[in-house]
Amino acid sequence: MSRAARYLRPAALAALALLAPAAACAFESTQQQGGVTLRYQDARDALPEAMRERIIGTFFKAYLPQRADFHPKAPSQTAIVIDPAYDGIAFVGEKAKAATITLNPAWLDKHPGDTDLVTHEAMHIVQGYPEYANERVPGWLVEGIADYARDRYGVDNAAAGWALPLTVQDGQDFDTGYRVTGAFLKWSEAAWPGLVKTLDGALRSGRYTPALWQQHTGQPLPALWAAYAKARQDR
Ligand SMILES: [Zn+2]
Image (cartoon, rainbow, N blue to C red; front, side, top):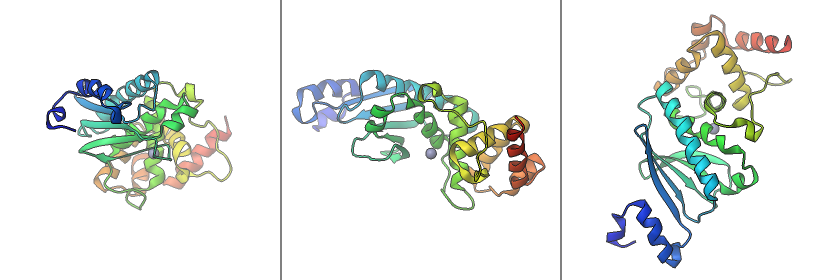
């Protein structure tokens, strides 16, 4: 890129890309809402415009209230990168000083209703825990909180047929993670408001221990799960 081009606004860059055969398909835009800047980059223009707009809209609708409710100091510089070379579904990491959600366009092509996966990933940006998958920051709880947040802040989970489970299956436990833990968190939060925020804050500051559940609810974590599983059986 020439020196002059570097200082052009993204809209101008997109226009410039039309003139440059090597980058003929690149799409990039930058938007701001509620003190948050989102840079959207789709180097191969892999996603159609309607999908792009749903993704950007979902991001702001989810991230702004998640951030306000859980961690107002969460990053204000964010990005969504559409990467056809990435063969997972979605992940969060830091790129060029922006908290970045990378998405696999092939997944969205096959599951066009699943745009609230952005809501799950946006919560990972809010979480911003210093570690992942150890005793201080258990992976099952990180993913459970992200799916709890997908349920709470999701824009159109029904379009993906996505919902937290209303029953407990054999072999599931509090640490099954994702939707199973998310449903357990939702039930627990309804009975003990503020629990999820307490857990989230402790995970971020390195103060998380399983004893926190008992401090907040009066019951050890396994007993709380047993009460939850029983309540679901009795439905
Ligand atoms: Zn996740």
